[in-house]
Structures are given as C-alpha cells and as structure tokens.
Image (tube, rainbow, N blue to C red; front, side, top):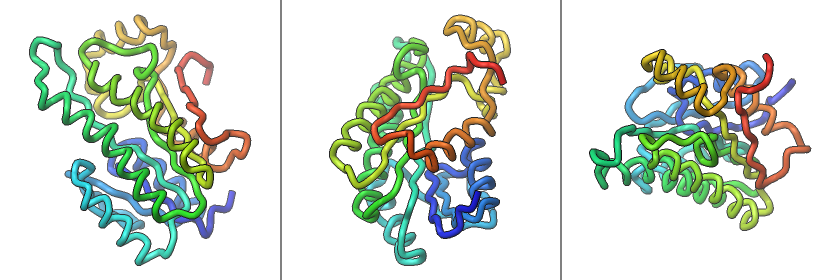
Length: 230
C-alpha cells in the first residue's frame, strides 16, 4: 500500500490507538501530523499542541498545517475524555467537560477541516456506548458519543464533497482500560456480551480500511463489537 502524497491529521496522536495509527501511516508513506494536549511525544512527524475546548487553537492548528503542507487529505478525531462517576456525584462541570471535548471539539475540528479541504476524508471515533453498551457511570461519555454519530450523519449530508464516517469500537486494550480493576472489566464485558477485548492495532487498521475502502460510504457508522474471532 502506497500512501505517499497523503497528508493525514490525527487529533489525539499521543493516545494508544493514535500512536499506533501514526506509525502505520508513516510506514506506508503518508505525511502524518498529530496533536496532543498534555502529553507531548517526539516522533518522526509534526506534532502540535491543541486544546479541543479552545476554538482559536483548533482554527490556528489548521492554519499552521495548511501553511506548511498546503493541503489536508484525511482528518481522524481520536481525542476523547471520560470522567466516570455516579449521577449523585457527577457535577455539571464534569458533564460539560466531557461534552465539550468529545462532541463540541469534534464538531469544531470537522468545521475547520471542511473549510480547508476541497475533498478528503474525516473519521470520527465513537463507541458502542453510543447505542447499547452504555453504563450509568459514563452517561455523559455515552451521550457525547451518541452525539458524535448524529453529527457524523448530519455532516455527511451537509458536506457531500467529503467522506465522513464514524468508527464505534467496544472495549479496547488501551492503557486506561488495562489499568482497570480486571474483575470490573470482566463483568462489564460479560454484561454487554463482548467476547474479547479489541486490540489497539486492529482498531488502527480499521481506521485505515475506512480511509482506503471506497465501498464504505460517507455517513456510515462502522461498529467493532469484539464478538468475532481474531
């Protein structure tokens, strides 16, 4: 596979999936640009600090990328926030933080991407929590991801020149998940019927598939349940 000439912007490159995806894209010849907020990483590609709660930083990010690379072919929205706690302790501020990063931040990235892309691909990362694996402790996270899926479908209608999809995985072997209480994780996977935990690498490869597979159409929500054999 030759991705030479592709300019790919990954929002949230310091995450496990983003870090792996960047490496795969780089290996195939793509020009990779990544963003981080708190955890900068030094890699073979450009990285920029960008706080998704600040519209001016998002706007400035796209201006910098276009100034340096003249175009953007693919944008991947990977950054997300979760603050899991019970309804009796969850505050308005916490709920709004999750919505602002996961939903409003995704909207703003899509907005400024669309203003700087004549054609191209935007992939938003949702979760099966948006539809049927939600937990009361993460109701704000689930609501934000349901919003991301609705946003994706609306943007696909509004921006027919772009291919805009969302990927919705179930539990993935990210550091935050692997550091959970193993009994809690086991119980949650059983509760939602997930047979195996998804690997970061396979999620990254699914994102790549969405990029290059013309049979996947704009507006689609691609689900990864973890119920298949690997």
